[in-house]
Length: 252
Image 1 (cartoon, rainbow, N blue to C red):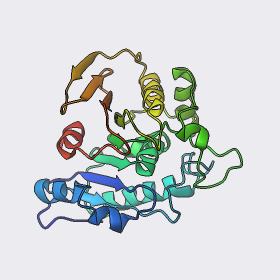
Image 2: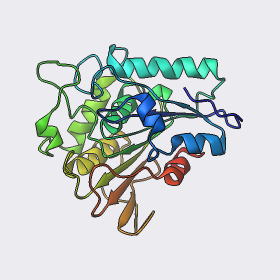
Image 3: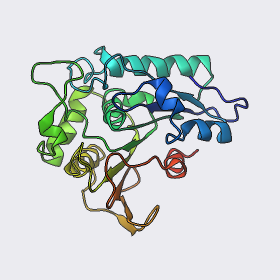
């Protein structure tokens, strides 16, 4: 947990690291700007660490509400932080890149009641990395290679099955991906957009599309007010964090 010298906001940002990293390393990584954001705007940040090389986004436990596993551990951190640091429960935001981006999607599906908005970089749809054997933190070549494709309805069903019976508000989703991603194939962007547009009951046709936004060769597509996709042409793995744009999505 990082508490800035001057707490000026009752918001919480959870910054979730990539593979071969840790909360500490992610916090110290100059390319990850959430400490600077915290210092500038005065919100608290939480930097969870996985016990395995990558986050567990493959086991039944982690892919279920209150099922145990890594998603449950992060949910418990959020609950603790809300109490400990007097956080407004309506201002809990999640971000992450690569494996952390995958976990951001999983958290949005498994603990929607805890999170207001997500900004994830270079991930895959929630449930895409599922392990047939139930292994924790398993790598899924079919998904990473972009071969896990389904209808929007099926992807939406995957989310709904992670927390059966949940009908309350869900976090709004901002999804970033690079067109030349060689680790998590660009097709995963399209599949993730299918997933969340279905969950929110909107079509996969953008309601607005802005070229060269937020910068040259990036395109920002809105799918109603709750789903935004940002496609980074010519960018590999993973898309660099855009602090201002993610903060704006969070309303910070």
